[in-house]
Amino acid sequence: MPEIWFYQLQRRTLDHALPALIERVLQRGWRAVVQSRTPERLRAIDDLLWTYADDSFLPHGSENDGDPHLQSVWLTCGADNPNGAAIRFLVEGAEAETFLDAHYERLIVLFDGRDDTSLAQAREQWKILKRRNANLSYWQETEEGGWKKQG
Image (cartoon, rainbow, N blue to C red):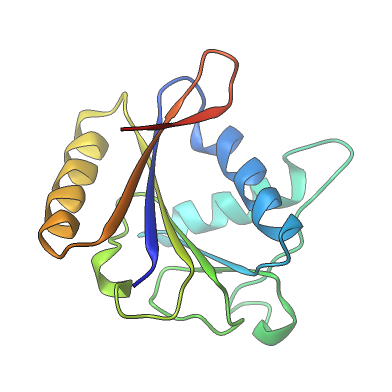
């Protein structure tokens, strides 16, 4: 069963936090899948990963690009993992429970703690996963802009 890390965004937006987290994953030599619930959000993430920094970008692909086995980061709205990723990012309320028996090192649930709906979805996921005896961790943003594991 993979580790499941919940990241509560309080100061930064997903657009600021996601690229940095993906960079860390790639630095470890892992591949990643980013799953969203809607194609609109997925297109926004696609654009973001090309343009988030003036001096850098994160190469990635989706079903529109093909050759998933060549992509270190794969974007999807589905449950696929065609690039053999070890890490799965779940955004926009995408559910982690589906992947408890999948071969991932880690599932990362990113949610906006300032949005009541997002917060409620994350809390419900946490409860469901806790009942399933999942290995859960909660990460909170620090004043300095980093992350600190809670509890």
